[in-house]
Image (cartoon, rainbow over all chains, first blue to last red):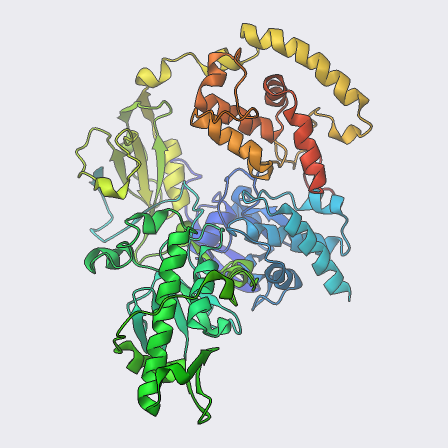
Length: 159
Length: 475
């Protein structure tokens, strides 16, 4: 047993709340959220920061939480799909429902978080922006609907 | 499975194989979701739900007129839940905004005379999820429930059943201008015995199926991250396991040293998956397609309080495998890799074709040259699911070695053995679709017309193949 295998108490700011977690500081944020805090909206997909199913916001930027260690998340504002809005009222969430975007839905939490970060940074994204920022993988192939929904949400926010 | 109980204090636990991500939605919840058909949180509910009457194992109606419909197959995104609700609504004439789905309990099916599988066999739980047989079953269940509701109202009002109209979860007797909701008479209707079962109306009289186009009922839950998938299920006192399997098919666990990791944080024990262990026979009716050739693969799992603890301990534990015959075949890289004679001959020719084609392309973004960006995925975001239907079919056809005589799906006769074998073909098609340079080259060699066809298809969908370097976070 080496010195890195220790449990420490870490304070986090998740969805506007202060929480305390006892875990190895190297634990990926994904497992802290899912396993320690019970917030299972954030999904495990590939575990190697490729697919984006685990995307959360850290200080308003989209980050793949499966490769983001707990120790790096202290003193940062973490937002998960559960905190994107209290009641599903975020424009993206509304449009997602209206446009019937999800198929199986497993990747969509990450897709939504990536899209939300994009709209914060780029209120009127182009198709190219969407391809660049929202590079999450969807096995069902919902990309055309995702793209259409992001444009619709952008217009909704603007209006 | 051999288990070593260490300090998990005999509590009940369920090992969740968190190393496998769940793709099935098990259940979803939305008690506050207004004005829409919805789905229930629990994988399956208690039977019957509180304050409601069960008409058939498929349908219950609550005192508040909520119609709950049980769905036996998992909704994997194909909309089987929404479809089941729509089929019942067609005949039950209930208010679409007050129907909800929940999963049928396989356990109940077992203890309760196969109530869900008597018409379709066990396939009711895993196959033909949108098949016509299900339509017939649910139309009949809906029609039957509707007539029993009407009969109950007819008895209350002492009028003929034929004079009662059932629509939007309301029972109306127009002559006397009387009304009851489905919920009002549900309890009474639950005990009504019809003299003869009603016949569902013919297809050309459908008012809802094929006409209404509601969104899938899970959408609000998915959008809030509230849908519950297999990987999200929690049970009391749950612990987690990380599993490692033999790297070669059919390999055996030779040695492992649990003592090296037993004191790591959270570690509770280990579990060995031993393929030679005697297992109870499986009812062959469960798997009509046969699973005799399916054998457990040798594996070792670490059980811990949390998944990451199990994973770290598993990674840290010394494990040795005895590969066995599974590793004795010709390595794939030698069969298809750049050093094989077939590869070099064909690849040389092909690369020149490639070079010509791409250099002629005005759109240099579509070059297959990889460029590395620190934040970008190592492969382009492009999956077989985006490929045209025929290509997916092609992959499947090859995969099962079934040549249906279709010109498109017939294999080149001169293809080497690895291409003829189903596995290689699937793999080849998959990696080709992923855009990997070597594989794409190989792909073109096998089916020279496919790649351009593919790009054309994608363009017609308004999509371009996403290439290396275009993904990633630009700042």
